[in-house]
Amino acid sequence: MHRLVTFLGIPRISKKHESGYESTIYRLLDPDGRGRDETIETPWIAVALVELFHPDEVVIVSTESAWNMGLDGAAYTHGEALVHELRRRDVRVERRIIPTGLTHGDLWAQFTTLKDALRGPAREITLDITHGLRSQPFFAAAAVAFVGMVAPDRPRLRIVYGAHDLIRTLRLGYAPIVDLSLFGEILDWTHDLLLFLKSGRIAGLARRAEVIGRELRKRWADAGKQGEPPRIREFADAVEAFARDLQTIRTGALLLGGVENGRRTPSSAKRLRKAVAAARADVERHLPPLADVLDRIEEMARPLVFDGEALVGEKARDVLAALAQLYVNMGRYMEALTTVREAFISLQGPAEIAEPGLPHYDHERRREVDNMMRCKLGKLFESLAQFRNDLNHAGYQKIPNPAKTLIEQAHHWAEELAKASCAPSVFVNLSNHASNEWSEDQRAAAREFAEAVIDVPFPEVPPDADGTWIEQKAEEVLASLPPETTHALVQGEFTLTMALVKRLQARGIRCLAATSERRVSRTEDGRELREFRFVRFRDYPPLA
Image (cartoon, rainbow, N blue to C red; front, side, top):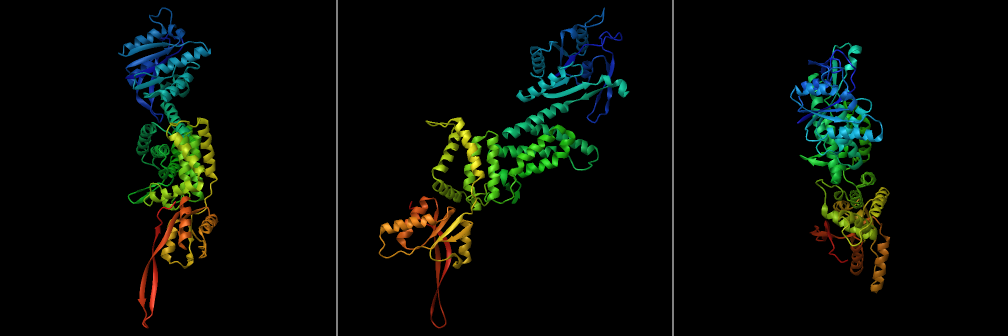
């Protein structure tokens, strides 16, 4: 059903027509301002709109005084004359009276009447504001905005204005009917984009972008395809992709991108920032009020643009902290705490544990680093997980944290992430074979586990040392290791090796032994040569 909502204003009393309005020639303008061929002569803009758009019903909004005015001796009042003319065109007519006063009660009554007229079962509504008096067009605009935001399935809206006062000044010979529907479109776009900025959620933008993008593309093609094609559609696609990744915490897609047909694709943050730049000229030309919103979207995406291959190092920390802070600012506290926890693990490296969604991602190694962080940070890391789990499980526990505490913790941990240390992960060579004497294969294998390799000489153990001495020496060695230690090659005296592996594993550090292959050969003079070739690092069984 198509509904026309129109205002009936106070007429200029004219003896030329019993309606009280002067007869006028109306012509609809196209979006480029050219008048269409069809003209309609009538005293009422509502009649012209019925002829042009063929609505099923007309809702006339009027004050009592405007409705009842008319010429002496006329068969109908002002309002009745319009109703009579409309019914001759086989259209249903409904009258809705609004008060004339300017009290708050009267103004709310105007708003409510207009709001109700713009709702209901109609699939399409044409709103005519030609004869809206004083505050009426303003309240019509407010009602349009309100219905657009709260109606679950708002009908398609066309807004028109019959500029009959321009006839003499422009010497057109007709009153142009101007399509102001762009106003409603701007409200819709602004609502969706501001919702996106505040919450990361977006709805309906694709449909609106499809309509306006198709129209702009058609105009571009009709004009001979001069210059670059319009980019509104691509901008909307980029916003929606970013919003989906943000809502579902797809950190890899947001910050690193993905792989398609064997090639890396840009992250949704990069794609959004690029789309904002590409669409700016089209937005400033066709939807100029949204230019400021574009600036805010660009400001939101900029800190999330990351050029690294994996989420390790200081730049990755800054990007992950910006993402956590964005979630906090949007009131999405569970996502914020989840991002912080996973960031602390990723920043420990190696690269394979910090490439979510990419081919080299190693989930088993990430679990190892996760266990190391539990041991390394102890209750501190555990408390972060507890707050995150409290949100994730909807407070289903005996003593759930108060909402205020969870919000405070989300702010706190986002700030802590921004200050987190990004020292490189360390592979400790706890043996008496210096790493500079290793084969290149062994050094390369160690660097696959951690960014840095350091040597810590394995202590000499006196043959008469007892168990107490072994325990004390193990504690001393453990205290001397860098806090960034993630892996350790432990090879030395057997009892101290056992004591060290047990302690290192308890702190989440992966303990390894080097395996080698012995090759024996003989020289020409009969001497035997033994050569040991590195094969791999092998894990110690769990002792902790």
